[in-house]
Amino acid sequence: MRTSKTFLSLILALAALPFAAHRAAAIAGAWASNPQSRVRLITPWKVAPSPSPRETDLRLGLHFTLAPGWHVYWKNSGDAGFPPIVAFAKAPGLRGAELLWPAPQRFELRGGLVALGYEKEVVYPVRATLQSAPGHLLRLSADVDYLVCEVDCIPYRYTLTADQPVGTSAVPDPETVPLLDAWWSRLPAAADSLPGVTTDGVLEPAAPDTPGGAPVLEIRVHGARPALAPDAAPGLFLEVHDTFDAGRPEARVTDDGVVFRVPLKPHEVGKPLPRETTFAWTATGLAVRGQPFSLEARRTVRLGAAPAANAPAAPSARLALGSLAGPVPGALLAVAATLAALWLWGLLGTLRPGSGREALGFAAAAAICGALWALSRQVSFVGLAAVELILLAMALCAWLRRRMDHRRTVSFLLSLGLAACAAAAPWLAWHNRLTPPPTDAPAATGELHRPAA
Image (cartoon, rainbow, N blue to C red; front, side, top):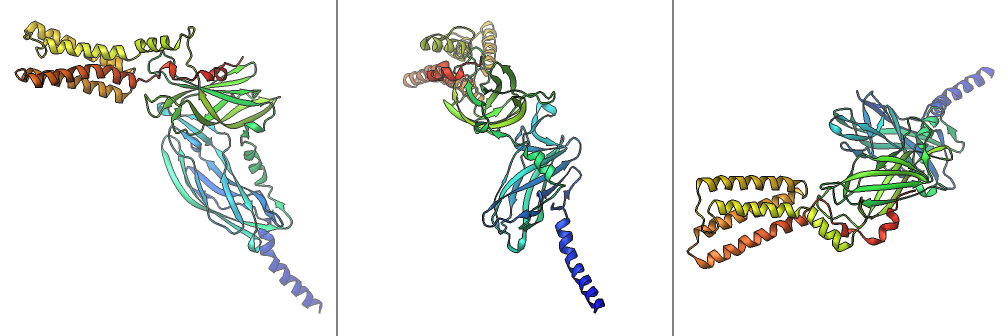
């Protein structure tokens, strides 16, 4: 009898071994590996808490380790690359899996390029909701597309899986809990949730006296100071914008906070700046009452006044000065040089060409090239091409007029065409200028543009 009981106990113990081993194993998916990186799914639980009677938040992580010198990307990858794309398969009981973005780093690449992302190791937190777990086991599966870069970039795509037991008694995983906690702590806090910290901004057009200058986004974080860590200087990371690409941010400390200034490059050169637009950003390397933090914010930013060294003039005076300092004089010079060259070459008027006059005509043509070069620094490439076509049309009208001199009606119409082209050149230059006129800015934004003390 005793032998039978012992044999029965042994059978029950052997039957329980697979389940006990399953509970004791770390709940992390298998690594998907390549020479540059490894990636897997992880959770902080050996046994996740049961969602009954209410649903439960389930923290997951997309865990990367990277070879030295290689990096993966933030939500805005920078000048090249793309961020990871994760699609979770539908699983009974799992809802709303969302990839989150820890505060990134900035990488300076060859050729003056910049990448925003992570090196060595990163866990992208994933927030999901656990509603139920049929059979007390949640099967996780996600398709992951990502790009890993050093100098060259290599794309990879994997299907990652992990099995998450669910029970009434939660059992944390000591291997993955510290890892997930460390990267969840790097998620930026919402700016509105930080007591005593406020943010605002203004979009400044390029200064009128800097042809080809870039507009500047100024972002102010009031109530913050730089973090004390020597390697944690204040940094700003703009999310992808529909209208602008961001340049290199510069930070300065003021009496009531930290101010970031970011030069912007419009996607459509010469297009007037919007009166207001929305920017989203993450600011890092900050502290409040000695506690380091990073924040994220989304703000509607209004167009402010362009910076000026002198006192502001009246709107009409500013417009006149902008016209004189803008591309109109260059276009008028190009038109005048074209007319002079056509006259010296005998295509206008009754002057007959001669060797000396032809040489002067080529000098006038050189003046046209100089005027167009100066104009290229003040108007968009589309505007410059339009002005060049206008000058060619002037030459064509003059040549045809010379050939049709005996037909008065045709000659008169060609003269009108020549005059219309001469008038159109400065108009096209002005409407395709790189710097918008100072009067485009609304007067109501003066308070927002006031610099921090």
